[in-house]
Length: 175
Image (cartoon, rainbow, N blue to C red; front, side):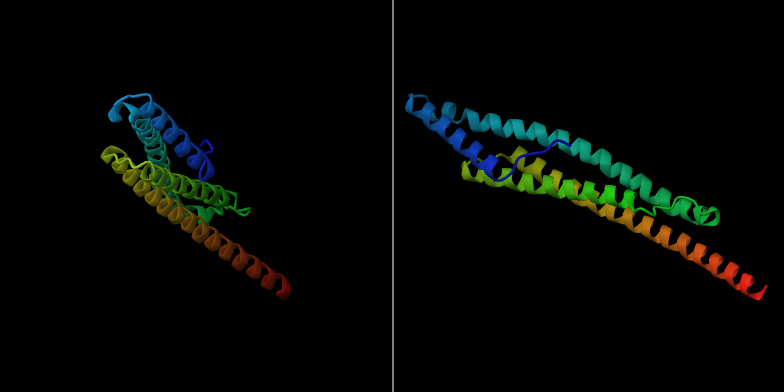
């Protein structure tokens, strides 16, 4: 996902849009025409949120499919001692994805504040923001479930390996 600016960038954007709006109003344009840059900006963020919602929905779908697949494969994998994530790289990747999604949440909240500062309200933008935040929450919850499934699986396989090692050590000690 692309890095999205927050905080100071949103503040500069608010300042620039307000300056443009004032310039258009001082040039004698009607208020609704002077307000067009803000309307365009809201439209732009609606399109961006539509794209992000589609992308996060695909990611959430993957988590939703992979989590149950791990839980289903786990007993078989435990028998064969497969699919260990000893270096925790899968869980780390999932955690990175969750952190990125929380950054996107923060960005969405910044955008909401920005439009509030501009005195602009868009029902379409509000709906998209609510949908975006909901899909982020669902994705993070699904990712956490997947991390838990990986941890439970690895713990079970490692417990089996330890038991086998203890058994082999006990047999070696008796011999």
